[in-house]
Image (cartoon, rainbow, N blue to C red; front, top):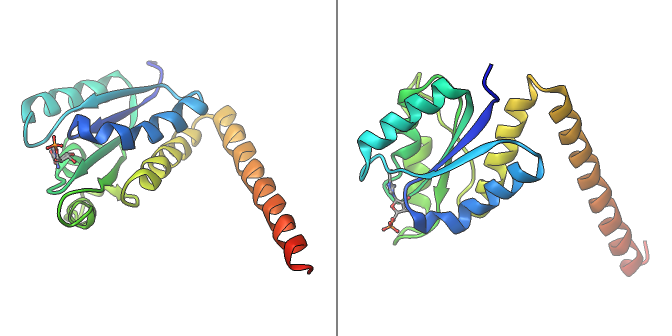
Length: 168
Ligand SMILES: Nc1c(C(=O)O)ncn1[C@@H]1O[C@H](COP(=O)(O)O)[C@@H](O)[C@H]1O
């Protein structure tokens, strides 16, 4: 069995700064990943070849990021039965709203799990991919549970500080 990994694709290297946030989350969790610049519009044959090959090599989930006329995630979803998470990139005249709608409005039967625009979405795409992998990986599930506990402790500490400040 090949080791499962997450494939991160982005339509342009101009998306890389934002998508580094997804890479950072996967790395923190010790999840194997590949990162590629591939465009449904500019490099359609290479996109097709990569998705088919990654699928065979044990890719467990794809994260596809694109801005403006964002067709990359939908194209990837058309080529695989693995889950595809779409990340709309900020930018262009409409600042990401165009990418959000292009990514989320998929025809029935070819879903793209679409997250928020920009770096918040990039991070959540990685967390969501991690949760998908955790379905078959109890160790990873424990690491995710520990992250949730750490988040809760962090918020509780902040709440304590706010309560102190307002004397309640
Ligand atoms: N939407 C797509 C696709 C695609 O959907 O295949 N390929 C590139 N792009 C997007 O075009 C924007 C501008 O790209 P450039 O910065 O290279 O001009 C990027 O956000 C990219 O994701």
